[in-house]
Length: 241
Image (cartoon, rainbow, N blue to C red; front, side, top):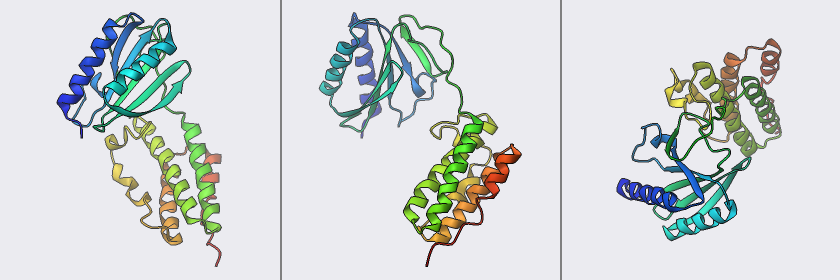
């Protein structure tokens, strides 16, 4: 397990490395550190503004991270931006984002510019309410058919996905972060979801949790047609004998 001192030292080393790399024209801290909300479990989120030789910069910084004891990485792309997520041997997560300098900037409040210039960018929007409701219904439809077919593990997987979308709808309704579960603990009544967790794969237990999720979804749906479609999900068809 990494220590806070180890994490802080590595972050200072990365900031120093960015400052002496002539291809890096800007850098920023993102995530909880940028908001002043860092705690014992926080990772490192670091964004680089690159004005040339992007592929070479990525290669060199990847080598640097492995020299700092990374043991693996995974890539996430958003347009022309590469988020390379490193796992350190100590279990610390280090996210290094490589931005073309023409696109470098804040897409949300969690952005603290260290040096260079940031472009004015539109903020990343919250998820679309109608899309979340539609996806929750779609997951629910397949929960029902999976239970009817006796495919309990598939039903459990889909039920969990349905619950995630309903949770996001509740976050939107209360004006808290609706992605990656970030706002769930800030809801007025997060325990409302307690009954949505199936404690076994017994069909009756899955059906019980499913009914709770359907009820919570109905609370969040405002379109009468969608509400009618959601109500049609129940009752759950009994699994074949």
